[in-house]
Length: 272
Image 1: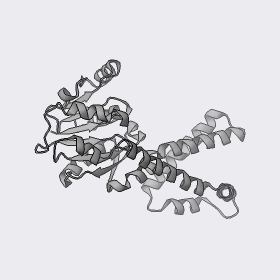
Image 2 (image 1 turned 90 degrees about the vertical axis):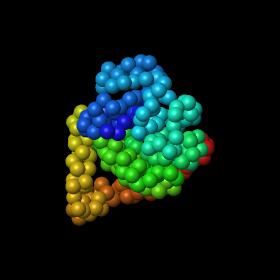
Image 3 (image 1 turned 45 degrees about the vertical axis):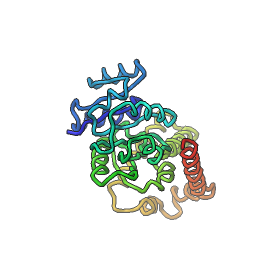
Image 4 (image 1 turned 90 degrees about the horizontal axis):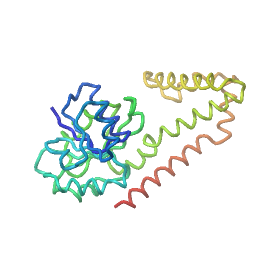
């Protein structure tokens, strides 16, 4: 059984822990490292697993060292890991979920040859529907990627890309939930403006989004083809689409996601 140390008991760290336990892929061979006592008590009480505030202690014997902290806290984690008995010769892998942190930066702080896998998760991981994108570092081998993929599959889908695509990934799936929530927010407000009660408008929009996503996921048709199927010539949907296109919806998404990609690259450069 793979032993996993999750360093960071925040929302993403907790989501991964919950997913692993609920999937049955892990039993109790899992430890969480959390320095904030109140948060540590919550994790321990909720899952009945070992929680420690000592990074070096928590990673003893672990096969996967999952760094699930904010980018600003990565350096302190790496400093703490330097006190642990890590070696690139051992079958251990560091998995980083910290946004904008390159594998080269991590490798530079770890023993020579230590395998690193970078991950861009997103918040639907909290409900087991995450999109995790992984990129191998210089020393990560195929079997390392297979193991990381298997672990992350407990909380959603997993795709592998080259690391030079991670800024684009951040713009698409990493930030993607926020775009989705903005569209939902706008549609609910529009529904209220059309005379619907807010709770009714919210239920209509949320279920429409859930159903549409499920239809797209299960269909062999593209989003464009499914959209055309709903859009009758000169009908109500066509009228709405005409106004959305006139407002520049597509170009606004394009510009917004380019901005997210640029910002991701800037953040990565600022922490090197």
